[in-house]
Image (cartoon, rainbow, N blue to C red; front, side, top):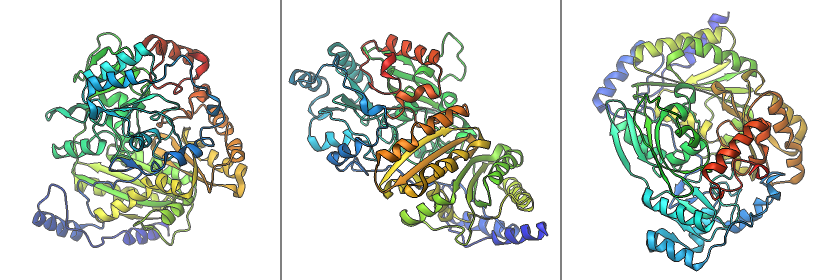
Length: 559
């Protein structure tokens, strides 16, 4: 009976009309391949699949949620979290004056020093309109030397500085808290070199991730990370926050992919660690101090990164499961059956799907009749289309027979695959459109990962909608709590409970978003006092005047 039901579902997943477009394949050749594949098997190959851009995007440099600095300032009072709202401006910092502006103009020119209120207002606010500062100055250096001169001067004058990339973060790490000088790296966007034998890219920190992805794909490679915000985020910001993203399950963290860095320290010292060597065991590997330090130890200006080869065969499946236990078992089965070709394993609860359908334009539910509680998106990439397809078919058949998968579809063309990914990547965007969203990025053992979602629903009742989704293959939950407006009572029911619960599971309160301003005072939930004190010692050594991204990452009490 189970086999007949699985066979019925497999037939349902059969071939649909296919778009005759494939990156890198002539039109006639692609049509011929379609006929051969569709005549032999039920599922269709999607070569060089590209996911759509969603999340924080940019148009003329203005992010959604940043159009009104005044509105963001009003919201800010209710979104920092209980501890962060009480942080006072450090009186040791100097205030900007006309002599400072004149000096910056002397090294950057008129165009590199922005005082226009509207342009500075945009840089003062994060893309969600959640965190807002009061900086009066935006500096736009064009090279490392200019960054060095800026920091050397600011260190001498004790002017606090906030490095800013694409400003797509979620924890207030890339915008000022008070009147810090903003150093924007968007002008440092050059690709320096690409080794097309070893796949090593060297570029400046201001390069947009999507632009780098397009560049290396034309060379037959891919970037080792992929994010929903790839159309806006900068590679320097990705490195500084140790961004995880959708390919983590396949390629790991940037600690493994980044080969070298160039970093400017607080006193203007240019630290050249821009090696392209795969192996270098001479002394301490200092670059790892700056990967994930959120601009608090130095400003990343150049990066060399190892890029994997682009594989020709990609398939995406959108599946439903009856319960979270089935999602866990499906993950284990995918690791065993798909192994080396598994490139993404994302899960969403039905609340996420409902939200996406209500607030995202141009998307549709691939399983509209499914009353199921959980959904899983699986992507595989490999070098042998026939081999990969056979493995995927066998995996799906076994999963259906075992009752792990209740229903599902496999993308038959680029449009369907884009729709699948648009749903998953658009959840964050959709949640912001509701009005108020409390976002938590947690690492939790997979078997307990969804428990916090259910407990939070019990705590909040009907006062807010609780969403659970994320990178199940990485044990990374995105817990989003959405309501019509920010409310102190709601926040008190969320925090510190969410941090205490995560700590009790020996999890991390920041899986990939960083600590920023939002969680700087909460670091003790994930790190021991000894570890935090050692971090503070490193901060004091590299930035004794504490001018780099102040109030972020570490508690003020240890600095």
